[in-house]
Image (cartoon, rainbow, N blue to C red; front, side, top):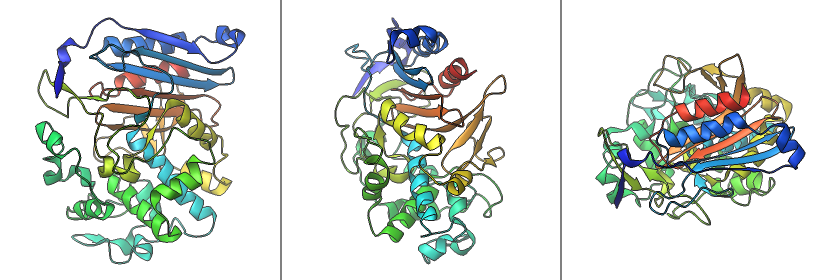
Length: 381
């Protein structure tokens, strides 16, 4: 299924921008820096990139590059894509809603809700709190870094296993079969296993599936009709870009594959959601503005820990409960979350009060963080 070579990516750049505001508002702030950043991302090798901005002037959408390297079809507003670990914010909000309802405490131990599950091999769920799951200070190993699981996740092996189905308990047990990164509270270690455990606690308390609670608590109330958790569904519903991937090859000139169709049960509550730039605005805007959570839980979510010193993560950031802050040049700090999966990088970042928000996605997985850092600096600084 290989169809393109990475060395051939830098081709003619197609850039479009649509002002989703009245002409006077668009003229007042044309997002020229963001436009240049989009073009620069594609010139640097990204297949295509979209960005949607909401600020006090209104809404703006811009795009560059293509949705499909084979056909040259342009990126469009409203496309669905896999949002990766941006999913974690949704999971955290649901946990915090349960805390606001008095149904759990962030200081509850994991063992209180999942008795006996996190035990042995250096783990003791009686000493790990829900808060430590959400801010990645639990020390629990990330199942995605398991050596045996990784063998099925890279290169040709991925094609053989991309439709494999995993249960949450299978992946939690894979994570726990590896020793912890550190004792609880002793550091920061980004781990999808943390969010699987948090979602299992949601299910235990509510008696409903994670997907049902996601729809009931977040998606339907916010009118996020283009967002869903696919489960075993391997296709992306509706209009969407091709998700171009190197399948994490270490080759100097890796081949690029179509990774659009896959079973994302391997990501679930830690990274499995499909959404759009517009729907992410509908979620992160109210969240940053303090409209989704009571004040006490809002403070908890945005209380951060240092991310330095652990496994490599995004520079110049601090992590809260499913959100992080990022310091930009010039002293500006933005808040939100981001994520990557095969063929997709997504970010939703904004000012702390939610008055200025940017959601963006690249439909390729090899460009790294630089295009986003450039876009954030252009838009917010």
